[in-house]
Length: 334
Length: 293
Image (cartoon, each protein chain N blue to C red):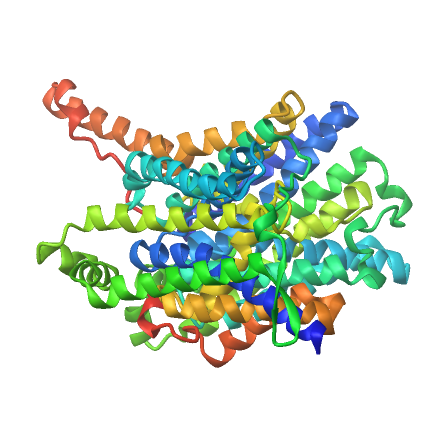
């Protein structure tokens, strides 16, 4: 895993340069779409640190995203500090909330953990929704004062791009570190890892807090785009978004969630503007995804790639490509 | 004092409806480890269809007819979904099941929005169910008594069925350990479908029962689902008695909360949930091993 890192860094840099070049040359609307996609990429990839790497299915990441958003919003409104002071604060506050969520949640595991995070996230939603004096209640917060030079769509896109790339590289580094390997060991066999002397709960809480930190940053970045924040960001329907992005892309591939984020946000903006039946379309698409592509797009790509490589090797050796198709592996091993 | 008693009655009514919805969800979750996000949508479907049928006639007969026919229709849909779709993902990862049920919830809710529109619909209760009965010095709405009685009868029947019949033994065996039950000759697939059907029937019935007392609106599916999750967590996964206890507790917390702490009433339920989680993570009547699977 470690050996692959420099090459992937080059890839990240290349993608960053391409997005930056495309970003500065397209119109304002496309710049906003790109910004939204980038924020979603960070959200989905930090979410997958909890789900795919640590094996903690969270249904409460909407609340963490919203907590990050409201932190930035409140700091901007009440303190007059710069956006760049508010952004790390958003990460810290979200990480604290995430740690609290994980401490309560890790009293159980698996799917039940998910139900707990959903209910706890709903608590955060209700607090924000009803604390009218602080959060503006159902109306949310609008017209927040942001640093003057960040108000151009183009500049803001570049700032978001830089932050997201930094976050993604940090995530890649974490996943490849011994900490990341231990998390995956816990995911694959909790009991055995515990017997090796690993403090399972502590590592899980730490992983969840890191995931929450970057999710909070993503939420903060969202506030900078339109200088507003609203309670729906914390709602459980918002929590479904990173989960769906991750599952569309694939949980076991590191870049899977990014693919899912691009597809979900992209299709939402492009198709959602066209049809009022977007939710219906989304439902049908998800149904198709589960029934026909249960390992996500990355999983499908991986199994296709394996099949191709396998049949190529096979045909070189035996000259009978027809025999290779039926017995190729159908699903990738995680 | 009168106000408190009135809120207690309202809380018990709400709690019984919540029990009907949550009991199906908790058993399916305990047995299959499937979180059925479409459960709330089926509840809403029951409510809208009951409204559609019962609003055509004004008498009690119309409502009763709707409450008999509509849940059966929703069950037919639920069984079709279980056999055609859910079954295909039981052996897949849990997350795929979640996406499947979430997608169905989105589709059903959106189709209902397209059919019935976004405006709240409300049904006037038939005259026979509208009045009050003098009880302990105050007027108690007849309809509340009916709902609480229906809920109590259903809870008793469920307990009898599960604890006292061979069918109940098989269901409990399938919940505890589907593999062993299957190898001992229990038809687990059939039991799964049957339990699923009963759960859907209860949800649709609860949806229908709410129509005379609260407006039918888009979004009621999500609201009931979140409350049901709180009930499951408080009562304990897979436990019907726990669901009954927790549902009544949640109902009372909400209604008395409105009286005493009006600004944070909706939060109180979740505070209760967090307290239970800290003190007893498996829920009031749940078993530990079921939350660690």
